[in-house]
Image 1 (cartoon, rainbow, N blue to C red):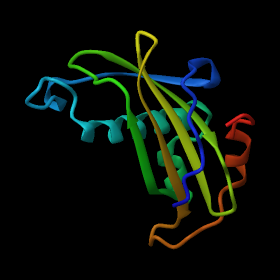
Image 2: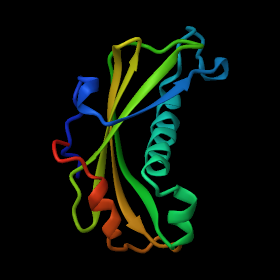
Image 3: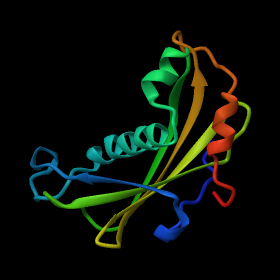
Length: 144
């Protein structure tokens, strides 16, 4: 287990936020967003952060780098429901030569619904490990 980042419950600790509206197709039989929908929310917010910071993921991939997901941890606090706008707060941290971690806080109307961490490795198109690109270090937040 590589996971070492502890995501904050304070939205002010995150410099980037990405809103996502939940869809009816993501609900389960109890009318709440199924836990499997959270992982694509994390991915969407992570890609939006890279795009916002000047590194659209399609350009990163065109340069020969993919960020493979090694681990995902989600702590569910309160359920999400259909048609809610979820603010996914994102921070990058714990960068090493071979991995980095992303912390997330999911809120609705400032209420914490979940926290999460993903761990990533840089790989080439064949899945072989690569060194982290230098630009990634500039995106890591000091307090993360």
